[in-house]
Length: 165
Image (tube, rainbow, N blue to C red; front, side, top):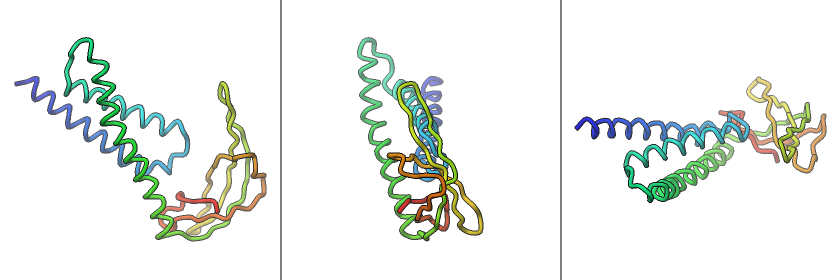
């Protein structure tokens, strides 16, 4: 009896945690630029799913790892695809409904170096709703230089949602 109640309680806690991860991934991940933030959110959700799978599937010896992998793949895969597509749809809808033109100016360039790669970034500022906003984007092919002007489409309700035109 106690084991069943504990299992149910942890199932609810994990599902609420996964729902929060989905909500943040869909509606707020544009606020936290960077691969690291998305990576940690994804890892947290995967660990929660692994624990949920362990709760539901139990320990069955040598097939345990295969069942955990299949559970993660069959449950986590569709959730990840759903969150990615909903986030993309959310951004597109915000720009379509509330999009306004803005001019940005590149203020700084830098390169982030990792063990085997380097990624160029450009930081730019723009003014919208009487406030100055600062964003960074990957500077593909190093095409942006300090002082360049960018044409932006920004969501008036959430100026951190933008698209370079």
